[in-house]
Amino acid sequence: MALPAEGEKDIVTIEGRRLRLRPIGPDDDDALIDMARRSTPDDLRLRFFSAVRPEPGPLVSSLTHYDHDRQRAAGAYDPALPRGAGELLGVVRLHWEPDLSRGECAIIVRSDFKSHGLGHCLMAEMLGWAVDLGLARVDGDVLPENSAMLRMVRSCGGVILPRGPDLHTVRVTFDPPRRI
Image (tube, rainbow, N blue to C red; front, side, top):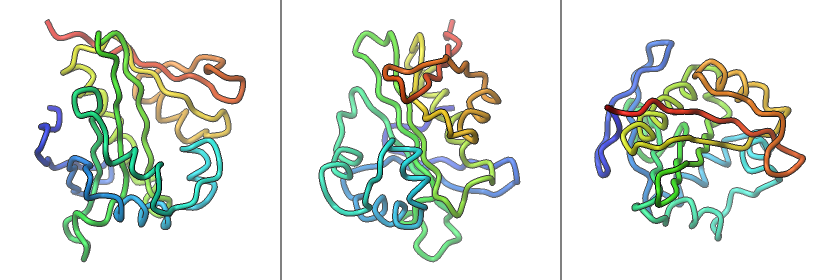
């Protein structure tokens, strides 16, 4: 079941760790900056396709101040950690076309929390949103050297196309099932 527009939900990683998923919003600038600071420069490059610095500015604002009629974003956190909802472990985002013909997805998992199954949970959540919205297709661009993301895409039923919109990325695509 998809995340309610203003709600939270429990998720469980393949390792059995219980986490919470909550919507990302305008008050999350500091949480996103902290997550980026706790990620390696290479992991940030793999997600944003260039070197980024974790600091306030237009990039962070664009990730927290978005059109809720065409985008959804959620962050995962562990309620048992001291900062709870303020300590993001990963974020998933989906942006869709007004005619619902396609969407574009993006995921990042904090470097110290990779390889614990959170990426799979975030991908499953995003695909659930796509089904709920009735999207015909969901795409994303991935750097070819991001082998962990490409393995996850395959394991979640996605297809990897040889080239993205530029020559530096590959396109990943999902055809979510339609609700009847």
